Length: 386
Image (cartoon, rainbow, N blue to C red):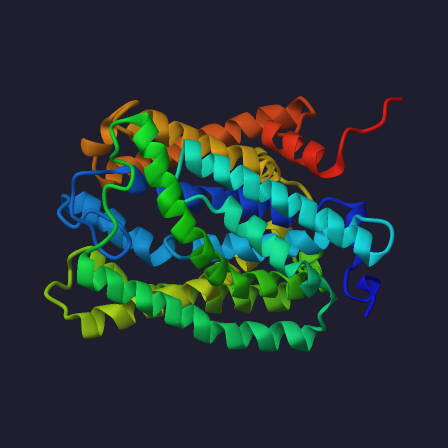
């Protein structure tokens, strides 16, 4: 099968609002999901939240476990798969050339992820996407049926990995003090050790939404949302509804509403949370398609700014980690041992807003994000001089 039969090349002619808007909104979810991981000196639950925080901290924990944790990454993965197809659609020439370019870009994403983990954050997701791109470039030539059958079969492995992780947490306690190293050099080693373990697990977790994103991109629902409202609306309602229903049991556990629950109940709640998060990620992406359809004719300044953030998502993602290190870790701001979950989430929101403002200023100046510029140069090489 040729790549032209599976990649819609007409997608290259116009930049659509919905994917960028979705990426920009997704970055808020990522900031909320990551900020509490920088806190230290406290006992944590399944999703790494402080289980001994004050009432407001526990309310924030419950809301984020239900709506954010395990939902942002699947949304990002679906958008990554969608964008993978769009990137291939922009290439002229035979499939081998396109595949080489996709893999070269993926290798550089892996390098970006390594640097991100070494310098800033153990929970880096760039390397996982780079590794997935290296391994899965060929899926662009798979038939639709093959994509969906493989994704369905992969759910078994995905669920197994979540269950094993849940058993580990139930036995040894939730993740804590991952960013508590007081010495910058020892912190590098600790971050890279955790990153090396987490990255293969992330690849397992992102595969299903990635394949769904590839499948969806062939139909272009986020590029032409007006044609797909009858699909986008129920997908958003059902996907987000499943995520909420499936996330509530674990949210009640981590927010200390249900206490003394045995592992035989807690681990299935953790698995349910993880699997329904896949539906939530797809549902959130569909919701952004609906919002974009309504706003596309005359997008207001907020929509334009959030989309500008999404268009510069790599830069904004990395800037979040820069801010969190500066604020939270012991060898910088040192507030990770002082603040609670609610305060950390407040800082996450402010950080995201700052990146939106910065991205919009770059848009007004006609400039891309610096990280995007570097990745593009590394992927395509230096453009010839005029």
